[in-house]
Structures are given as structure tokens and as C-alpha cells.
Image (cartoon, rainbow, N blue to C red; front, side, top):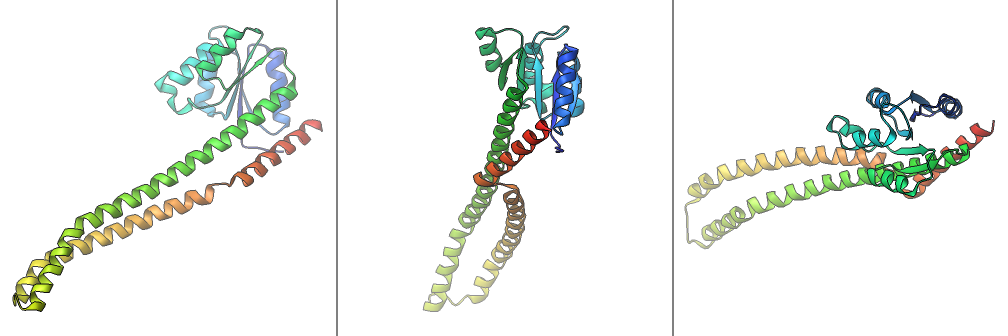
Length: 242
């Protein structure tokens, strides 16, 4: 099974990083490697990984220091939401709490079982897919809100002048006024202005509708998303068992 998902493995233990590289590559992932936090920051910039498997106890820059920079430094703002699974030889509750508070998504204590690692990756993939779908729907709702706001503004702009038009027409019909030419001159500019606004509004609505339809086409229902994730998990398990 091939996948376009990229995983960055950060660990100073060569056996661990070689093992994860081999097994994850077998499952079809694109695997990137780094031996410490400092090197990992450079790899993040170049690869933009989907998930980071991160050891904590490393030379030069440990996992917590790496996470702090990735989540808080403006230079890495575009990567700040990258999910992180942290590995550590420590079974310290305080370390786990600190890691979670810093923005680490999951935590595994060494020595680990690879099946557990796959389960963690699966959960993160599911969470990320759901988050992406929510973001897409929020953007589509924002487009609909923009369309609604523009229509309301247009209606408010023409409402009073249209009342004035009706009042002047009623005066002409009732005989209170016979200045038809004056009426025509008065509202010629208003008509041209409204016509221009309608054309501009129509173009904007068509553009927004095109964007909305495109975003809607990319959305998945909850059932479709569940099927997609389950299919990926089954393929991943089948590849691992080969």
C-alpha cells in the first residue's frame, strides 16, 4: 500500500529509528529521519510532515525543546498544528502532563509495541481528517455568510430610494405632479448605479458560489469519512502482516 502521508521520526537511538523507518516504509509511508530536535526542525521545513514521532531524551535539543519551538516560534507557524507522538524512556506522569500541555497529541513510553504505535497513528489520522473536514465546512459557512452580508447591504442601499420612486410615481398617476421629465432625470443616475451594483453583486455571488461548490465537493460525510479511514486501517494492517 502506498500513501502520500509523510512521517518524521526523531530519535538519537539508531536501532529505534532504523526499525521505524523500515516498518513504516513497508506500510507505504514516506519516512524522514532526524537524530535530534535541532536537525528535526530543519527536516520539518523541507518535508512538512503529516505526523512527527518524537523521542524526548536527545542531545543538543530534546523533545520538549523541539515542541516548544515548533508550537510557539513564528518561524514555524505553518507547521504548528503538525501532530506529535512523543516517545520517552521515562514513565513520569509529570513529563506526560507537561508534554500534553505543550501540544503533544499522544505519548508512548519506551519500550513500545509497534502495534500500539500503529494504533496511535491511526487515531491521529482519524482526528486530523475530522479536523480538516470541520475546517472546510467552516470556510464554506463563511462564504455563505459573505453572500448573505452582501445581499443585505444591497437591499438596505436601495430600499429608501425605491420608496421614493414609488412615491413620485404615485404623484404622477394621481395628477399631483406632471413633471415626467424631471422624474426621469432624477432616477436615471439611480438606475445606472443600481444596475452597476446588481452586475457587481451577481459576479461576486457567482464567484462565491463557485468556491462554495468546489469546497463542498471536497467534503466527506461522516459515513464516507469513516469508510475512508477504515479502508486505510485495513490496508495498513494487511501490509504489516505480510
